[in-house]
Length: 162
Image 1: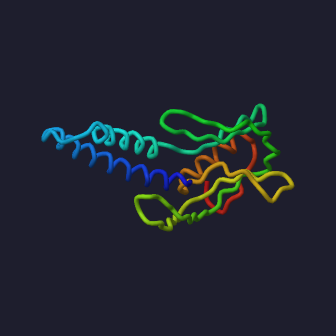
Image 2 (image 1 turned 45 degrees about the horizontal axis):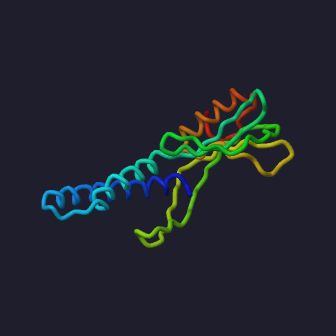
Image 3 (image 1 turned 180 degrees about the vertical axis):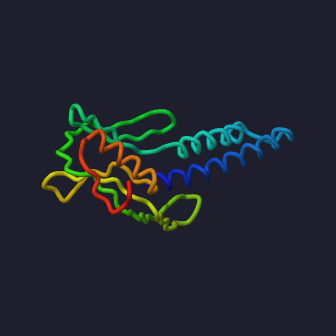
């Protein structure tokens, strides 16, 4: 799932949680509310918060030449196993457009498109496949590419200005 899809669903849960919380408080005043109704609002709010603040990342250890991908959700970082970092010959910053279908039980399926994104790609020696280090807006992609340049000691290959 792309981060923006999780954020969108998170905002839906935040709105739904707020609405449920208000209606359950109103029901509490009239005496017609169940425990499930009282708990549903805060649970939706907590789930929405976790989804809105979640993101994916990559950690690179230049000293040991390893990297790992991770997910950050509600203050917890879950990483995959550390992998050997092949020889990186350059860092490439290139435009990237994402299109994906979002399916959920609340709304019908819809295609979400993101334009104006840039990927920061670690190009590997003798390989057509690279490691995607970031997908960001242009200014953030350039900053991350410059940071990786300092860590890895390779040049940035891009038509964009750094």
